[in-house]
Image 1 (cartoon, rainbow, N blue to C red):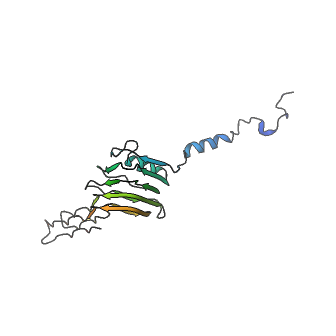
Image 2 (tube, rainbow, N blue to C red):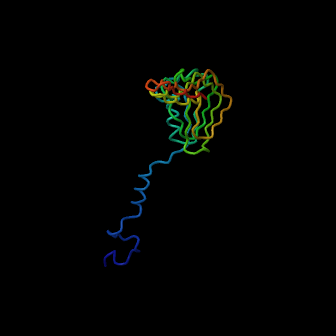
Image 3 (cartoon, rainbow, N blue to C red):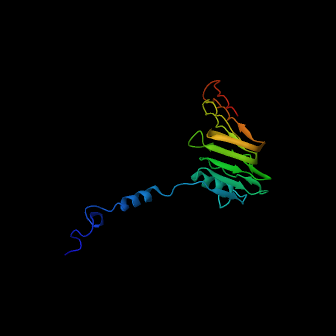
Length: 195
């Protein structure tokens, strides 16, 4: 008697017309990838090159893992953003530690927050935000108005932002210059507002 002639229950028999159930599940898990999870990132390097343990690196990783915490090592000093900072696009807590400043280098807004949901908590603690600058775009050549400059240190497009024990120093929000009206008689555009 052949061992497959009723000796084994149906589920144990191999049927070439029915693929095993675990195969579609394995494919589904492979396609969805690993789930994001909150993590803690420690900033020990004041450089702005995106290398490991810089603030830029920590923000980029925290954006991939909503609910993460960024801890800046005590007395690291001043972190100077020499390029536009990355958007904060996820809930995060940034703990500035003791004796630390983040600078926009009189050229860049320090933090731009735009999370997926209005209720996503972004918390910034124990930090000095200095020398941030947001400038609105200039008006057009033919007399167009200028753009609003808003949020020299922090601009919130969406998110529930809380700042605690944060000092704001020498941050500027400057509206753009109005258009010059070169081709329109007496047609000058208005300047943008700062805020």
